[in-house]
Picture (cartoon, rainbow, N blue to C red):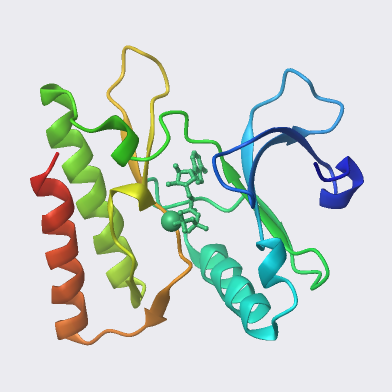
Length: 178
Ligand SMILES: Nc1ncnc2c1ncn2[C@@H]1O[C@H](COP(=O)(O)OP(=O)(O)OP(=O)(O)O)[C@@H](O)[C@H]1O
Ligand SMILES: [Mg+2]
């Protein structure tokens, strides 16, 4: 496991199901909130292209601010060990929660639509749209979960109507299996 100094103030609490994703907390705050830290795969670190792709992902996240879109909490662009930190969305991915409870469907669908509408207003076409890349978060068990559009590993800054339509087709595929 990586040394705790490796990620600035962030201390690793656990590994997620991927080698490059960790659950973290701020060091010295054992009762503080949990976050997710994403690094480059070790096998990808050598390649300049992978680093520039990772930097592109961070750069777009910096511009985004919407309750249904992945939130950037912190980042470090140091090419030797780049990383970024987002909140830990406590229900994981939408795929993990399928089939959804009937009374969640409307709110989750609405959240996904709001998230993608916001991205299109910002001139962002996101690819790789599937239930693994939508996260769910529930503030308290009394409240319905919120959908968060995540994984900006592949996107383009474009506003072509055809590309927007294709994204909505992806969204239709996602919401029809809820
Ligand atoms: N902030 C988060 N909160 C909760 N779970 C997360 C978070 N970020 C990622 N995950 C979990 O890790 C998985 C992979 O995350 P993400 O899609 O961001 O990484 P990736 O590098 O694109 O991996 P993949 O190639 O599997 O898509 C998600 O499907 C989800 O289960
Ligand atoms: Mg993904």
